[in-house]
Length: 637
Image (cartoon, rainbow, N blue to C red; front, top):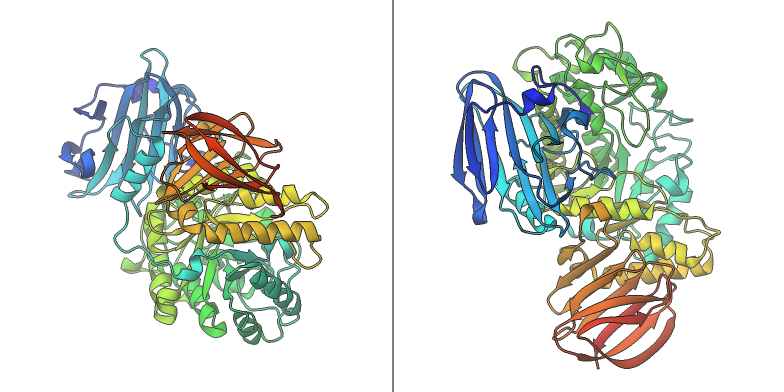
């Protein structure tokens, strides 16, 4: 989340000032700290409450929500990453959230993983400023929301009752804030996918991609994602060659024929595009640089300003024409988070936070994928006109979140006219909040190459709010000289999402290939419970060392750390699968209910049988032998 400021509310003393309007709601204190708006409390769904802010005049309404610290253990929000601890109010900063970055939503929880304060603001498009922190003198934890409201406008903030597990509280918030027009997910969106990125980077070509596609289809994938590198001028590092979105004829002599070839294997075909990027070496830069005042010198590109109608037209046309000309099934739309650079910049000039490059990344717009700060070029201001058809008048908007919403709505509507409900659109963290479900149906974890822990945490975080879209892992890759257990653990990290594979399958060692096929098959046969069941992942700050999923008479428990246990009933179950994603040779299942006679079938990381026997389990904990990175299937005896 980009750091920003709210005038008059920099110091903790001002944050904790007496409220002008206050109400006690579900054990929390709600206080409006500014004039120009009023606060009302309304009933919400399933025991929730809704705070409604009504603006009598144009205003920045600042709302405080605070509760006693109690037994608080951490604070979760959609962009928490690894930082889930309790922050002091004097150490916190205002952050801008919106469609490009995160969402105005969070949950304070206790040591038992129960919600103490769970809230979400109904702001699917407009940007919001958020701050949170602990007052050490009063032992109260506060969250502050700064909302720009026009006269007559209102904003809804939903509060969930305290006491429910974090996952349940956040899911309930996601349901309460869900957009009514979510993009439907076709069956292909819930199939394992193959991405070229980690396997090939920009060294892609028709023959190599088609060869990998054939192997991916045989391994059980249903979608191929052609990542960065297919376009003309895509050489070296950075993005100076991105922006024209024309296939490189040296790599793809007949791109449409290549797409048909891959589709003929039974795979859906998606291609990468970053429609806001205008590279310095492209024809687009010569035509549209005036619509992209924000420059990223280290990447050799500029960023189109989505608040401008002409810039939105350029970006939308690029997406639609790519699909139309080459008969693609969908797009991987990347780097939308760069739009956050315009959150504090006047759309017709000025130098807000985005006009600064002080080495801290304060200008925003730096993507987690590119790993660099960025700033608006000094002296440049967005202006309309030129080849894009003019930006003056009602088409331009002041809020970058609204501009991004208009852009994505245009892209969605035009692409659905081409592909109907079979359209596939991937969006990745951090632009995966509830409001983005209207525009994307594949929600991917942010890049974390080779980091199984990060992939697990990010996909589980995404799953809490994905009331409709299919959550996809970051692309899976590993060291081809490593053990098959290493490959298996990477695949385990994506069990509770849709796995995206991105390791070169050609020449993959036989044992790694066996592990890949075995775990993809396990995922496919257990997909309903893994991605649609009741998930219990424990406390967010503990990074989910054990995760369980239950649906009907099936259950899966995955162990990602040693010396942990999973608590599940066995009675009445047709199958309970125990996945040992550790280096240990056993797991601990804490059986609820009566003792149950069962058959245990174990398999190693490659799917080879490792033993079968009968045993009575429960009640209480039982150590069960499972090979490292292996599987034990528990069925009634």
